[in-house]
Length: 199
Image 1 (cartoon, rainbow, N blue to C red):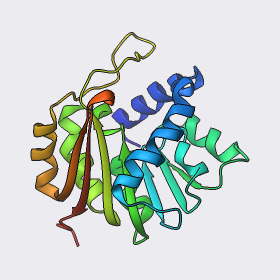
Image 2: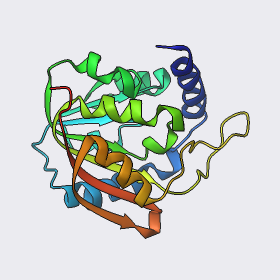
Image 3: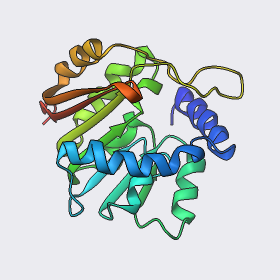
Image 4: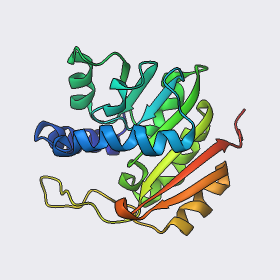
């Protein structure tokens, strides 16, 4: 990991060690599989790569699962959780293509993650995701500021943009097949395929 990736590892490892996201775990387990993944056409038998998996909530419903996260702490927690059946990798979004190599997946999920990326790193992160061999990409992006703060009092959403702005950015590297605005969660959801610029 590079210097900025190690800083993000420390930042989010501290948050997860201090119960970041635990209060919403049940809600997210119910919400993501029943709404976003059904809308995207994800089925239990599909293979999933989860970019920025965090607590890997959906692993409980989708067994053919690989999760990646920048936080070493949360990856170790997932690996040690006997209820988790997935495979887990400690890496940033940018490192995922080299970690995964030529492995193929039915769906790549990146939900509530891209807004955490610094603005100057957004295109680098999107480029990395586009090079992963997935048939479809499910990208759910928050368009509001985070309710959480890190140990220094900083908000966690580094890139807060409108759905229109995200559409323009994604269109550079992805073909957008469907999109919707989830008003209650202030999130924009996109179902895409990669333009395979690096294939």
